[in-house]
Length: 110
Image (cartoon, rainbow, N blue to C red):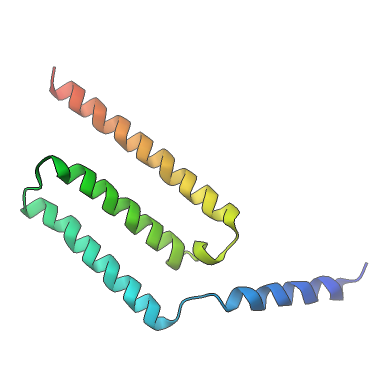
């Protein structure tokens, strides 16, 4: 079995993988979007969003998680298996957070 064939295949895969990364300008754009989303999260402390506050924070958390994982952790450009693992973890975290929030709400009403 020849190792040169596998090395050539790895080189082609590596070259194909390299062409999909964001440019520095795209990283700056993503960072600005994340900064704006963070500012919106911080604004929930200073302004009363009423009953929409918690769902807004959860939605912002999900959007920021997907952006950071997709671009800065390069999941957007890797195999789909890695993305499935990451988003499954996100799903579990949301379920755990929701269950904990419900426990506090039920406990506060008793």
